[in-house]
Amino acid sequence: MTKDNNFNFGVIGVLYGGSSSEREVSLESGEAVYRALIRQGFSAELIDTEKNSTVDILISRIDRAVIMLHGRGGEDGTIQGLLETLKIPYSGSRVPACALAMDKWRSKLVFEGSGVPTPKFSVVRSVEDLLMACEELGFPMIVKPSREGSTIGLSKVTRVGDVEAAFELAREYDPIIIAEEFIQGNEVTVAILNGRTLPVVRILAPNNNYDYQAKYHSDETKYFCPSGLQETVDVELQNVALRAFNVLGCSGWGRVDIMMDEVGGAWVLEVNTVPGMTSHSLVPMAAKTSGIGFEQLVFEILRGCDVA
Image 1 (cartoon, rainbow, N blue to C red):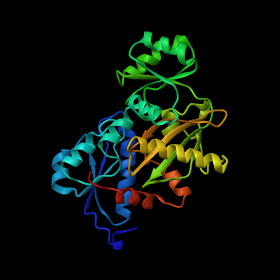
Image 2: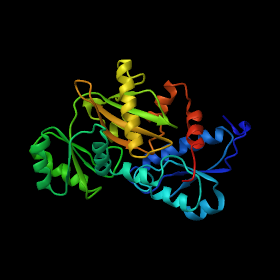
Image 3: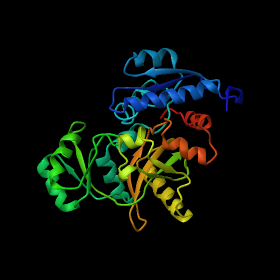
């Protein structure tokens, strides 16, 4: 898909980098998307929101924006609000959905209230709170900051002796910490693109620990797309993912992370409103399986740009 197809998007700003803990991944995603736009003949500009005077550049040179900022400042509604104020069309979900999806505590409350299955959890603000959560949730359990992505600050706690270290690690990133029931089983993810689900990706990480290293740097992590699960299971996972995406008010594109328990139940962990677009990323993998190459995927994300 190129400019010859009568799509005149003007100058496209690819917003990337930023100052969140996911900056490294954002730089990779932004570069990949920028190159894909250039190969298709579009006029595009890379904008590192940490290094540039973003507002001046947006006002003077950009006609629409593709957001490749991961984590805070990119997925929490902040940059989306700026773009809406400037009346610049942008990719992905609107401000309220981004803010809600970034906050695992409040998104889980919405899931519970809407009948979307999500693991049991407690909000903890002290080591004492976390010790009490251990009694309710049992071991192993997951301890993580409420408003981070890419498993940053996350720990799998298997004994009381690990509680304090897990709490302190999570608190480095957010004063609001989630203790969550650990679901033993398959980890899967479902990408959503302009209203439809893409094929399920099943993830097999070393030692069943899909952490930051396993996500972005390990060659041992295995991905299965098609998932290898029964077709009826895939369809149910896709339906659950789309429900979770919709109840948070998300739009455009995104990715829903799900754990399957040992009897096949699906439990939604979170919704990502700006998923990774690196060589290890899962949305491009799912798109490829459905016959959508990387350049076409970028075009579809761009095509979804709008002003709220």
